[in-house]
Length: 422
Image (cartoon, rainbow, N blue to C red; front, side):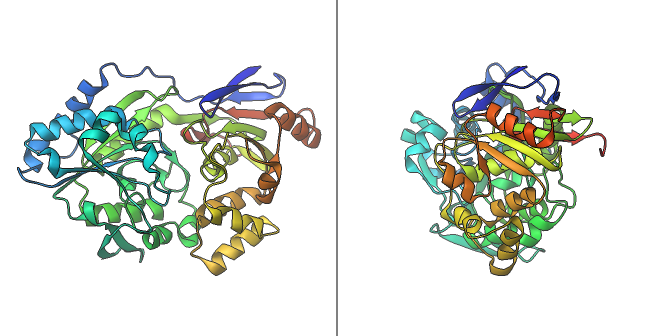
């Protein structure tokens, strides 16, 4: 069977033996919303669990509009014009609006601001990047998990705070969107390290699709409550990255509604675990680097048996990601040593990505099809492959010709559900 996989800004067509294939796990196919700007305004004027903007904003208020960064496919260039139009309609002056890109620990890249917010918005409004290492922050004490709450000063001191977002499964926060605009989006480095610590991620509830009892999620909610995130507008996208669902309003209630809607789109049921799982990081921009690509590996691991194989196609045009991510794995001799290093020496740059990767590697082998040099891939204890087909062939030689193969074309956008324990 020929299967098309997203890869960078293009695709790969992969041939999988029909006799081995148990399922291609696509998310639900939904049509994009027509006249999205009108729909955005409709949701802004009919919020979930919150008052309308006219009741929340006073003339003269300083407003912070928080967007996603370049690693997320959130269509902020589509969302911002109607949001800004509504703010101006409520009497907010252009000079009182600051748009800030919630980067978390991702490096600010000013050259990509036009790509995120659009040319006209960039020219007309004050658009800034948050820098977790350099931006001035304000302290709000600690969460119940003992994590310091330190948030970007510009946002902390704004009278009204509204954030955009894209809801999808997240490999340790449960789902993206909502409170994640603040933690990690606008938080100080030490705060993010606390939220992403070994202890937090080692909790069995810190997994994709889980919110209740998830310490990463609950800690992030406390950050958003402390700073007073007033309003969100989050979207759900289809395979073509078109908006199919919109939620707006209270950051908790609207996000909960969005998660419920997203589950209907992204949950993919599998009747059994596979010997070999083929997946991606859902193409650009999610597959910009290897650091982000751990998400696709983690998605595949859910339905891959212990001792099985994961084959990931991810372009990684920007390379590996943070230097610390490479350093931790390169200096270890085994996945167990990676985990021991993190426990002993944290906080370490990018350790959460190493932790999840090592957790997968304890009982599964990973092949990577990418633009990275073989030696770099091998430094991560991952096997480089020239093509998905060559990786399939090698995995079949190891598992036997009757091996069961599953495919998750959209990688971390999907939420695989295992119906049986086999």
